[in-house]
Each structure stands twice: as structure tokens, then as C-alpha cells.
Length: 307
Image (cartoon, rainbow, N blue to C red; front, side, top):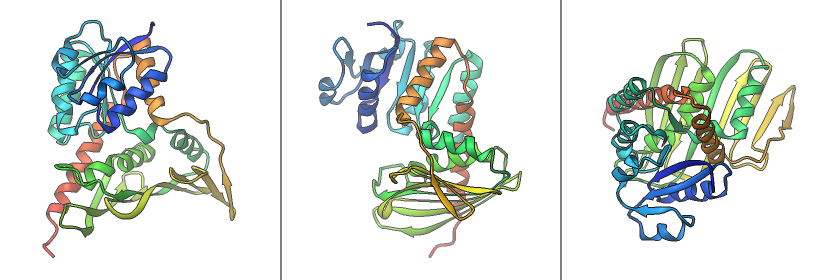
């Protein structure tokens, strides 16, 4: 079997999806997995090396790229080790849990001329890609509305803002395409186990406004992103049968999309960047901006008066 040889660090819920995705893709070989979960042995393809030593994986000279799919608190040290070993890196969102760490990771990538991609999953979806393409033909973007959430999970050390927020903020920043001018953040609900609902109001330097709501205390799952433009509104609803619709002139038109999966597209983008010898990706700068914005939101929430 030939192809780009990749290593994977972490084989939890999302890491297992990487394993399944990599097994089905042409032009890539999942050559090594670092995981302490005994169940991983039943997931990996024949010939894939498996052990718990992620540092040894980073040093493996036969690998061309490393995928980091661990809890976000571990992203920075693992990505830095992989870059020091000369590997391209694909990192799950959020890039890090601290803006200082995110900027240090970007600085390392620039110093070493290293390729680093951040898997903001929805940016790789066919629906978001088509939304962005069509929005450019509908006149000025005026407003973004985004909501994501579910009943749980409540993860130790990762709030709803940091768990769900990277998706919404990555899309909002990418589509707005301008610096942030102002930010407001407030809690709309909070539960004793750490569950919360957070509302954000963003204003960009080009006049675009965004309203974002994320929550892990919902009664049902939500994932919707709306772009309001001068000549129509595009709605990306990841849970609807028609994932993307155009509302214009009083008519709602479903838009036909390709059947590609976001994670597949992300891994293919990583593979192609390695094959082409690219040494940078704009997704890293966006990943840093997302972490900086999440940190600003966290500070604004911390400054809220006690209720």
C-alpha cells in the first residue's frame, strides 16, 4: 500500500472517526497510532503500529504527517513536538485553550516553515463551502446568525463556549473576512454541573454583525449558520434534510450539494498539502484568531456581575 504516511495521536470518540476515515481514503496510509485505549487495536488497519507513546510517534522518521485528536489541553505540546521532528500537523479544534499557546504554536510553524492545518470541521463541509461561494454573488453580507448546541456533553475543563464555539466563530470570522471591531458576551443560562448557554454579539470593521449562541443545556441538538446578504439569505442547517437553502424573493430553494463528508475533506486537504509540498495554510492564522476570540469572550463572561 502506498500513499502519504500519517500518524494519529488519540483514538477517542473523534479519533476513532479519523481511523475510519483514513482507512477508506486513497493516497493515505495510517501507519501508526498513539493511544492508551485497548479498544483501539480492533479499529486500526492491518500493518498499523499501535502503542501509547505519542512522543515516539512524533519522532518516527517514516511518517510525513501527524494528526492530533486529543483533548485540547494537550494540543500544543504534541503539535510542537511533531513540528520539531519535521512533520506536517493537522490539529483538532480548538487549536489550544490559551491564546498565548496558540501564538507560540504559530510562531514555531513560521520559524520551521512547517505546515499546520486546524480541523474546524464545518469549514470543510460541502454546505459551508457552497454558502461562502454563493454569498459572494448576493451582494454585501449584512449579518450572520449562528447557533450550535445540544444536551451535553459537559466536559471537564472545556466549557460550552470552548466546545461548541470554535465551529461558529471559525465560520463567522471566515465569512466576515474583516477584523473584529467589538464584542459582547453574556450567559443566558447555567446549570450546577457546569452546563451553560452563551450568547455573543460581534461587530466587524466592514459593518457585518454576527449573533452567535452556543449551549450544552439544550433540549435538542442544534447546528445552524445563516448568512443574510443584500439579495438573499443562505441557511446552512447541518441537521436538516436540505442542509443548505437560499431564501430570496419569498421563495426558499434547496441547493444540491456533493456528498462529501467534512472530515474526509479535511484529511484530503491535509494529504494534498503534504503531496504538493505546501509549507503553510491560512487555517492556522484563523485557528489562532478563534482562540484569541474565545479568550476575549471568556474574559467578558468572567466580568459579568454575579446573579
